[in-house]
Length: 231
Image (cartoon, rainbow, N blue to C red; front, side, top):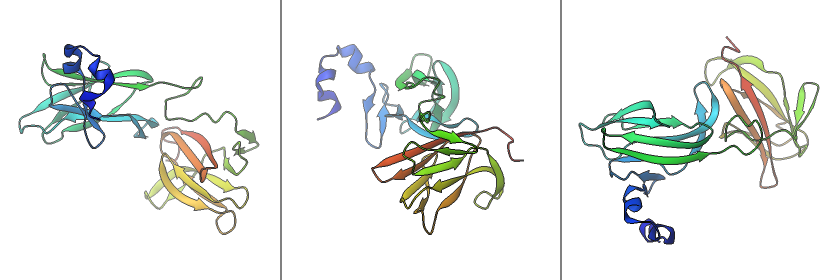
């Protein structure tokens, strides 16, 4: 079924239909002007200083060579885009967000995103609730009991980045097959025998480490790395 033929759209007045963004292929929606776009949903990504957080892309859709626009978040400019650089990342605030792509004073396409929080004191919508994990001494253990992570941050040389970086060690507490990821990026696999632990290097800001035992359980750990932690 096409977007325009869906029942909820058929119930809208014509003016609302003309103003509504339309979903397109490749995970984007096209603005009412036909000249702008935004992601069709937010996704978690690594901010340069805030850490793991919700983000969308927005900008010009199939721009003419001289096209340009301002990208707005909740009415405030966050980026400029043009034909050479037609899109920009937009990092969302907690709750409801309005992302605009302003072509001129009269042409401003708007896209809505809800990055609502789901538990008390959640830093942002990408950070899981790890309150049920247990901490004993310097070790945090997930609810499943299948993995544990060191609580204090260490500093070590990371060959992948060529610099000193904060890290924690993650342990397999049995002979579980655990797929380890950091900030949504697969890192390695632990099996409790030939691979029982792994150092997990972290970025500045909030980091999410997960250890998934297939579809049975997903352990999660959150670490907040201050700027300049490992000079």
